Image (cartoon, rainbow over all chains, first blue to last red):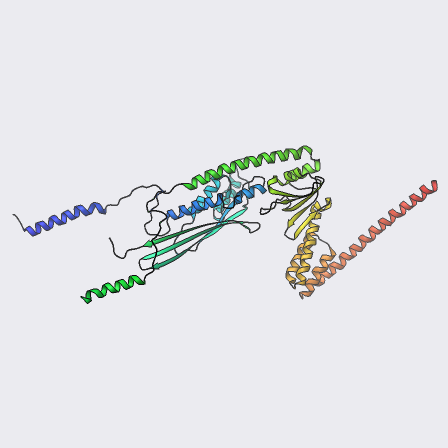
Length: 209
Length: 267
């Protein structure tokens, strides 16, 4: 009736451990603000993208030299805002970096400021052109968009991301450099170069819980 | 005792071999909430941009009102086309190029001035092309110069401003460029320039002769012979035209002489 006291105490320990451990295994999700910077692995993440976007926007609108490239263009073109097309932003780093996040932030800043106009990039405009051609056949004459009325870009945004990694044991230093350039499509002149550098020290303990 | 100390000594040595780093200075804490400075920058830029657009629009409005109030029909048409023309006032030049004074620098004395694009900025342009400079005398445009791929092209007569005049000037520039390539031994590039000049100014014997000679030197005899023949044919046409002109001039001179004889005899 009383049973083996060792077996009974073992059962109690196992049950107790299970009660304590099982809730800890349940998935927990906490919604947090996108502005909160959280680094887990040390790889390129949303914080890096955000920092790059903010720095590029700042450099683009408030240059160290005084008058921005967009203002200079407007002065020569009767107040007309320059038009930019996004070209290729090459990822030359060793890891996956989605460049679209900060490039879209920069595009949004350009459009919202009213200082710069942005036209669809070569990959985006294919669908738009298809739709326009389709309209010529199926849309009513009053509502169809005209052909050959696209806005030509004055400048192209190009750039690249490079990274350098230095590793020793469980410690590593990763350096990212993001360079964006605006090139005058007619003259090849580089009218603006934005640059942002990020450096991270990552310490990975070999043993730990 | 020594056995216990050996691993500790090894560990100490390994630690001493590693890189020495000063205490790291973090620029951001993990979990820190970032400020939204980007939005503020965009809002500030939007304000500045709106103010600049408003002031530029006001300045342009004033300039266009001044230009259109006093322009001749030809000048008004040129402003509407967005082309600079001879005889324009500075305000009319600004209206034609859709610019304000902030795009230009003015140099020179009061009677003769030169308007050039502001240094470091893109040159102002009209509907024809980018303008290198505009020369004014007594407040009216005397000549203006375009910056074109073949070099500068100055317009100082009404004939220069026409499409034919422009094509003629560009053909001349292309011939010069082609000659330079010929001297440098780049016959392929020279022939390309001569061909372009031939399109802009068709039927010009000098261009045809240059093409024929270049083809000859490139050891392309059949094409060279064709071009030489075309040159001879064009020269024949030139002769006929010259004779016609001379004959017309002579006939005119004879008629005038007869007229003078009649007038003198009547006196």
